[in-house]
Image (cartoon, rainbow, N blue to C red; front, side):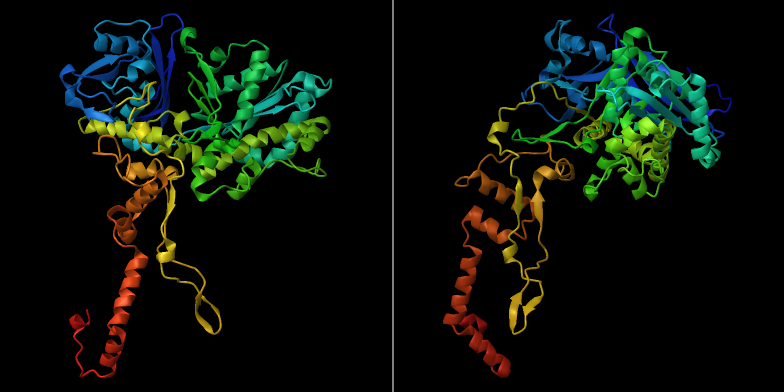
Length: 592
């Protein structure tokens, strides 16, 4: 489907690529692309393109070059034979090339475990999006994404807390739906009249500024509320749908639709997608951080980045998670509530009125009180939350500019995974330079990895006691006593620096000639200390490294011997004599 605009197209921007697999024929797939066309007169038009069985390139190492057993990060393209296959048939194709006969039951991840398969670690959506970067990089880098806000509210008085209202806002458009039974016997006419009156009272100035009209609907069930809001996603076609702490909204949507046995894949997929390719998946994002030694620690809501995956013109994500992860390098903030983040960025906050001011704003008791006694105000509160997200994005450009620039050609749900985003980008750089990127399959274990040091406890400190004190004098009369302030010191956290340090140092299987498994006579902790001190600054740690690696005398021994030689040969006295009587010549070599 393409909008008709008379002005010629000068650029195209690929906003999204989704892929669905047929439930009828296991070897068929469908790829959906949302394209924004940039016209010569500055206007924009939208195109939603469907491609059946897109042929993705892959490379298999030629038989004469299969002289290795370990997987490689990348390989020279000239050592491989190129092939093409659609994603659904990829495992079948690879099995045919590798083993001489196709296996209809072949598993793609197992096929990717072969060290001779290259070029398919990047999915079809990544591959196609990169094509638009190659052709229209200027527009891909500068075109802003459009953002809609979505928020649900749930009935706090019921045990399962079902959805009883939800709203969608998208610039000058606002849609609000609510469940009829929640309004304590009011007729539809009374509900709509009360909402309109409260809207005029609370938002008169805002409606003028935004030039918008609010559309209200009263429906029978929570499922109908959710469905009609998703219908607005489809018809309005924003690039992104944003919710704050979206896990809650996503789960409540799913509960409501499941309660009425609505087909989620059909509801969420674009109406133009055939039923056999429609799909839906709620990805709750990262729930735990798992260390190399297996230790788990729970992540807080703002660290998870939940998303909904479906064949649609839009992508639904958690604005709170993106806001937090993008700013993580600056340290954890005191609060990640929508109200606090809005105020932090200079955006007007939530709709809190005199009604309910005797309770702590935003807490459960406040919600219960407002839902019971001030339903119309509470409805405006719901709509206002979406406007806050839109205003916050307008102020920060987080979703409309930063998000697409940070994920580049990678799939949007991989945003928290910097290694994946870096790998996707490097794969195309490698291809431009005559190499093909490797794959990660099911069997990622390497027999040699057990010989290498683990990633646990990779933190080492330089020997700060060897640095001169740069502090202040503490006591009058004790001029040689200083506070222990020091300069030129550094700490190295190897685990925390991944993958940035790896990328900066160009470390890979291809660029590494040898890996040190063991240092004779050194336990694992000492080996790590030596490794980090050498990697961080060989010059600053020269004496310690020579002592540990080459059995040089220690710093203390060198200093003691030096001071003893000075004393035994009376060097200080002779130099003092030289300073006092400049005509006397002191032969320094005779001293030693």
